[in-house]
Length: 452
Image (tube, rainbow, N blue to C red; front, side):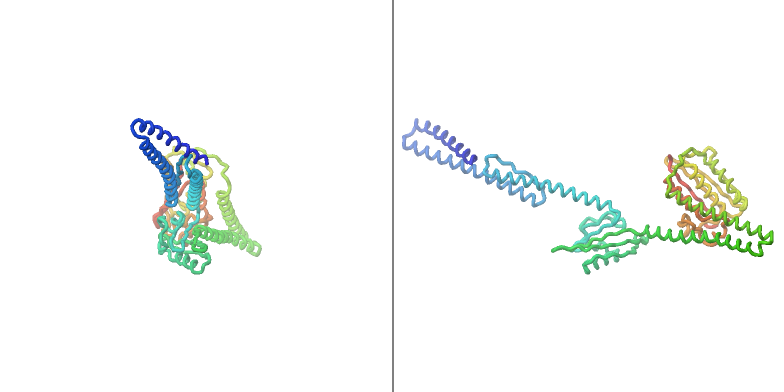
């Protein structure tokens, strides 16, 4: 009501002003009748001009509002409409601007939700693939790309992208056809390597659309660990059984008439003693592996002379050295010092030296060398032994693994856990070990530690 009164007063003032000006002018020059006609024309024209101006301004406000609405429909960001406070459309446009503000807030919220969703998908340790009712892939996270050894596609993309993985594509088709989720183990050849994935599909539908979501979980490492655990139990049982059987057998023999013969009794007791020592070594090595993986290191790092440490450990295995007549060539500089955990480094050095002696040929040689770089230090143990076939080199760090029979026959003693212990200790200290071997020539183990 106030807006209409304001308009009316403005019109009145303008008309009166024009009338006064016109009257003054006409009074001086024209007759009275003609004055009245001219004044009436001026008054009427001015009034209708002002009415047209106000209506045109209101129509423009509505046109701008319509344009803003269309831009939102087209996906643009909402923008407010500016309008004079005395416009007839003030209330309507104010409500429109409030609606625009709400839409902006919702768009911002939706963008944040989408970003969170994309971040979650990218960080999931499982592969996620979603196929819509047009058989287009509209979700394909980075984990799925890595698992299937594919470049992350620009979405949406046709389901034919998965044509190389026929079993996976077939599983998706079955889920669409049966309208029910599936679960199976997929054996896929990925980049020349056999992979085992647990694939779970979910069928989703509403009144208009259907979709299938696929969750891929990599079981390759899990199944490998399970096989290693099973092998470890089988091998451990065998390793424990062998000395126990010998101890039991010779003990029973001594309980019989053989125990009356002094020389036989001493021979059998020595065998029992030797087998007991083997059993003790085996138990200690198994316990060492468990401690490495599950107990925190309570020792502290210290500066160690690697040359002297090698010399000390070589003396500690003299019973093996003398038996096989092996020569040590220590090319490590006598002032070569490193900073690490002495107890762990001692175990690593001793196991590698013992391994080099046991698998060497008679009158063979063990040569050690060491070097430092800007970011790491390393030492190598090279023997002149029987070597390791290429197809067995990947397994030498497995627990109880000893290779083929010809390699096992050269073993004087040991538990088959030495290299496994070395590998675990290096992993504990972010170190690494490399193997280079040639059958009939020898083997070189290179141990690498990061600089402290």
